[in-house]
Image (tube, rainbow, N blue to C red; front, side):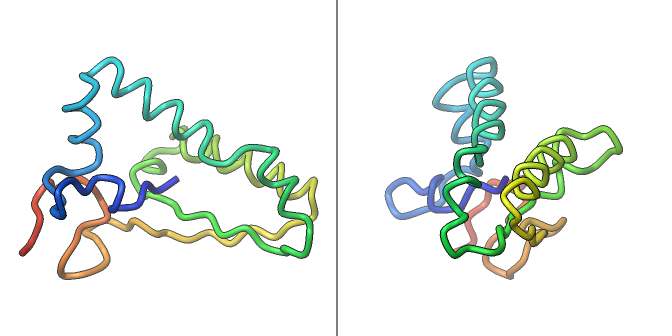
Length: 118
């Protein structure tokens, strides 16, 4: 559920945050539809079914902003994925990959700051 930073790189620099870049390219309505569709299809039931050939665990990179309230979209998506993994007898490893404030001094994984530190 986390889009990697290299997806938002244009010309060697992270010019905009991921969300801002998609917004610039698609506009508000199409941008919202893009992100909704992306989250719904980030991992599919077919993906988990293909993982049964020797894989025992699925690591799920999570973005905190999908879990900020009890009824948040992230919980629904995660419940769906856990159900699929349970059916395939796969363990699920939860990875809070994008915590509030970011992970490093050079980049913010929260995508709330559209500043590239040079």
